[in-house]
Amino acid sequence: MVIVPPSIDLAAVGPELILTGAASLLLLVGVFLKEQSRFLNPWIALLGVILAAGCASSSLFPHTTFQGMYAADLFTRFFKLLFLLGTGMTILISIKYTADEQIEHAEYYALLLFATIGMMLMAAASDLVTVFLGIETLSLSLYVLAGYTRTRLVSNEASLKYFLLGGFATGFLLYGIALIYGSTGHTNLAKIAYAVSHGNLNTGLLTIGALLLLVGLGFKVAAVPFHQWTPDVYQGAPIPVTAFMSAGPKAAVLAVMIRVFEQSIAFMNVDWTVWITILAILTMTVGNIAALVQSDAKRMLAFSSISHAGYAMVGMAAASREGSSAVLYYMLVYTFMNIGAFGILALVARQNEQRTAMRDFTGFAYKNPALAFIMTILVFSLAGIPPMAGFMAKFYIFMSAIKAGQNFLVLAAVLNSAIGIYYYLRFAIYMYMKEDEAPSTLPPLRASLGLILALVISLYGVIRLGVLPAEYLDFAGKALLTF
Amino acid sequence: MDMPVPLHHYLILSGILFSVGVVGVLTRRNAIVVYMCIELMLNSVNLTLIAFSRQLGDLNGQLFTFMVMAVAAAEAAVGLGIIIALFRNRQSVDVDDVNLLKG
Image: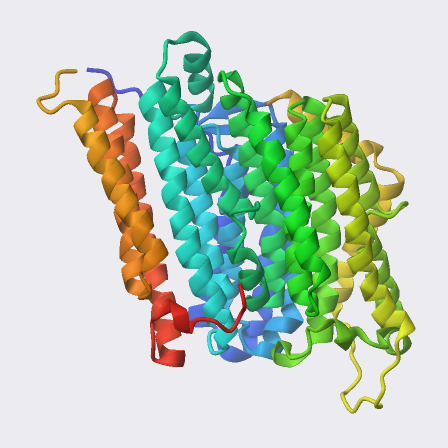
């Protein structure tokens, strides 16, 4: 008998390997170095992220590897760079936060890197097994990160809720995968597509499987009606972790949805765009209306991040290459602007996150004009006001949906954008138009080096992608070609 | 492949187990019992996968089961850690007591 060694293409998983190395190094450093050297941790993590980004942007020949379980294509590369951007910015805004809260352990940064590895596996998954492993690598890290400030009760609570509902969602996801496997005989997306379009299958079983899979993924991307955990978890988790969770992991789940639905389920006899359309409308509307009535800025941003996932799903409902590339572009823009906004929130919240209410932004523009101006640009972008990138991102999403004939969906999305402008502008109103009644006794706020770096990246993204989007759009469009 | 017990028996059993798990998660109040119900859901999936694997004569389903088991073990470590952290702070693992954040 001849045993053929499996082909293992380590170059394709280079960024993952580098991050694994950096995270392991961090864990060792955490054990062997003294407490005074803890300030090194974020920089080691950041170095890992930069090296991984360098590795991810090196040239590649699109192919699938690891017996068809891992797709090393431009789509994967786009998402890898997006995740590394999100992780890098999160690390930058975490430096001061973790020092203030005395949680600057190596494990915090190691978990961020492990979560990033999970997201990368998700984006690269061309097999449902890889999807599952990626989601779990991500989720297990996030459960811990959400509860990282473990003496704070709200953080505990966020972590427990996230863990129980996340585990519940995993059950649905797995049952869906099991039924799809049972009806097609495969877990590989390309083979499922082939079986679906050529075979005489039990379509009932397959449809139930696909629906359960959608429920599981809907939980992870916080689509309404599977969103109940989101506001609580986002509000309870440490602010940098909330920033992290709202950008990268959502993009990762959307990447999985694009791959699974457009590559495999698309060949089924059911119109899956109807499912996505319903989810998108519910997600946008409920997220926005709930955000309207919040008085806590952190909770408001949590609800608004639900609605942003809804906008992205509008692009998915277009079910075209253009729609999908608009989703990619949207998530990139969202990563740039949202993490920056959370960075400023982390500064305003002060120690132990005591001051996260909207009214804590009162008079911010008089004390910190530069930061208030940056915050204004970021919230304008989140609201979708030109010339910021948030506008262009929404524009391409809506365009693709109109071309696909989804006029009603676009109408709902535009109405929702209008609601969004109302509550995002409340930041500007509090910062510029209200003054403190009593003179504050709190020490003045000073932006740390990490926050300044993160804001520079954020501003660059928001303005560059808003004014000159062509290059990045092209990148997002090409990502879909090799898919 | 020839099976002494036909496929649909396994599927019905795993469907029942999955439903018991779902109902348990939605109705039980003790965090550890909720977690046990989640494990029940995962195990019903394992049963489904193995039944299909036998039916199709394809080993991938059984391999997937190992993945699920490995992940469930990791999840147990993390989950019990979270529950212990909660217990230290409030001397209770009742999910109804976990209500600082209004959902």
